[in-house]
Image 1 (cartoon, rainbow over the protein chains, first blue to last red):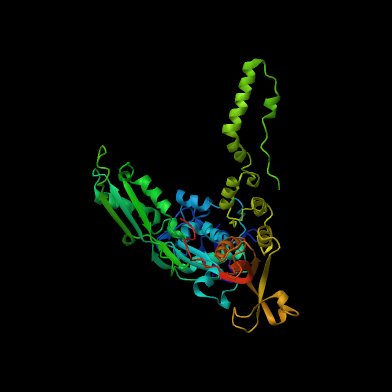
Image 2: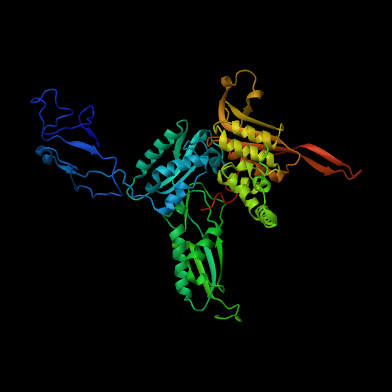
Length: 296
Length: 217
């Protein structure tokens, strides 16, 4: 049952049409609207990522009386889009927590997890930090005491104000003794350089594109990795990714090297870090060593 | 806390062997089990209560369960701490950190939540409750800062960073941790070759969280 609030005071929560309270005294539950009255109906639940166009016609799921059909419904405002079921990469992220975690947020990581778990499809980036981390980058300030700092970029269809309101509710439910302060996210690219030596069988240009695509699909904007703050890409993870996905790098004669830029000085907790097409450098050469072996 | 001793295959050992062949088979089974299976079997057997397992098992579990332990070659303390972390951790306040300090640096530590003088610029006038005469609430307000002082002969100045992170992992999000490490700096006296112990070298460091990669993705 969607919550309904009218312009009348107090807001009504239950509207019945087609029954007259005067004809059936004491038997009608709820409010009888008069012709021409206007209401805001807030829908809080939906299945999947539903984003109707503004002004599009809406209808009730069921119509009980003939008079119900006389109600004109149109879509007025999207405050927060619905969300599709999460994908496997996100599920992995959401199930990777210590066995001691009991949904009670005390440690810093637990606050991050509490927010992320509830809003996973509504965010492109989320970073949660505390007074200690804030102090280590911007120095002590008396206003930072008992404050939780949050930097968030909402996904398309969700407004910044709405997501901030949601986070305030989630943090408040977890620990109401903390203040929440929002810091705007700042984009900062991850620089990755891949040097690869491959067999002459493969086209270097094509391999270059494949490597770029593989890295972008794991560390680009909107990926699970890019949704976290205060992280560094692991060399090992990139190596495993390339070994699994790039055929040219799988044979015995191929070799490659991954360099991840660690520009940690000047890094801030609100840095929204992901790899974009300009921050990947891929150098592919055909291998000139191991010439004495078969197939090269 | 005692770890479980690996049991011998006594039931099989004590069972009757009919003839020489069966005795040899029994000996072979027991021998192979002890040689090949036993070491892995111990860890699998206690994986639900890892504090009873081998050091490898416990360190794997410690990492996975989000507890950082400063390595002090004290296996018993690590086992106890891990068990406390899993079982009876109140999370809030300093209780767990005090247990941690007591296990790793017995009786040579002090941990206090600091008060700050009202009106003074934060954080220039921090005091522990014991340093304040009278009711601290009159002229001071309670901050979220925690000061830990450790006196340890085997900690060098470079170990401070290594102590900070684990201690930080035992504190709630709202706290700010500062650690002092006082360690004796042995300076060789050139005149008679006798080492001269100094106990007043104090290292204070705040947690520099952006000194390196925080976590991998």
